[in-house]
Image (cartoon, rainbow, N blue to C red; front, side, top):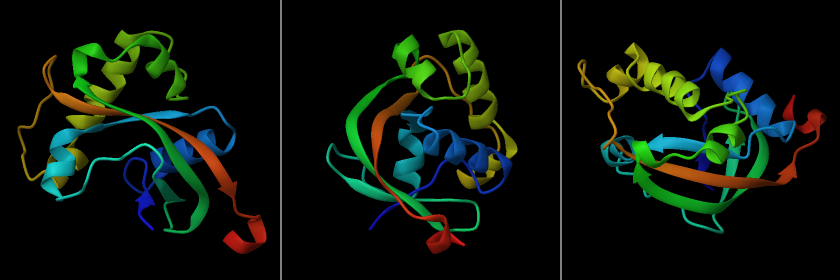
Length: 140
């Protein structure tokens, strides 16, 4: 089973995973270029993935319910809100994601120290639902 990984391991991943488990985060956005870099297939509706935490432990099974490949400029307010990070506008969402995507970790992962995003950058806007949450005793 494929893994659902949100951000890089560390505090941001832990925050996003917690938001998913609380039902606050039901959408996510990735870069098409990142999928291409690692030779990964884009998500498909109905696909199930094991969501893992920063330690690599499986916490839940997520099912993809919607996939849109769109330019960054077409991300809408509902998608931004459903990311569960407290964004109240598309501009706020975009600023946070631009900082992340143009940050040192992403640039290193893409092996492109000058990587930038703009209105035309292709993103994968995905929606998902929780199918199963594993009991804490299984996780620990």
